[in-house]
Amino acid sequence: LIAMSNFFAGRYHIQTRYDLKGSMYKRHASEKEKKKKSPVYKDLDWIDHNRKVIFSSQQEMNEVREQLRMDTKFLRKRRLIDYSLLIGVHEIDKTNMEYYTDVTENEGVVFNRNGDDFIYYYGLVDVLTPY
Image 1: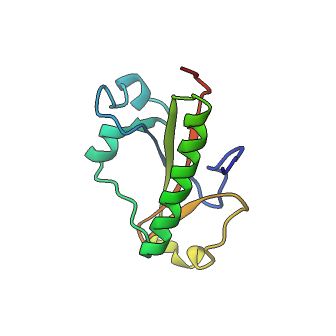
Image 2: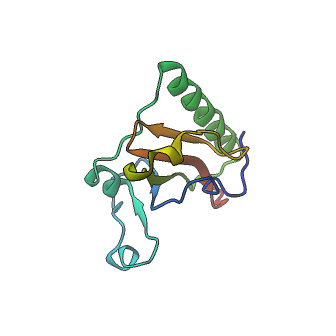
Image 3: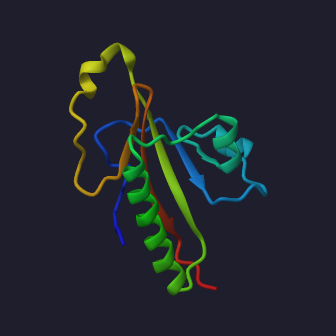
């Protein structure tokens, strides 16, 4: 289990946020949400925005999948059902590439860099809703 107080507290500013539940039913951000300074988009918005997380290797992808599997197993054993995969997106400023040469992050921050386009921060969150 990875417990973090704020996994968006990475080195780079998050411009776009997604709350993904793996469902398509009513999973667009509302018009009210979209008007906010920092809206949180949902599953269908992720698809509409053509987002994807690309891993640098099969091993990295397997490690992340295994961690998510263990975290969801932990939540399931405690009968907690309202969890989401939160993803924060930092769009890389291609006019300032030297800013991105050091890829280290704050301890406990899980991130993935998709080439020279995006850095994704992610983690599971739950509002502790039992069933």
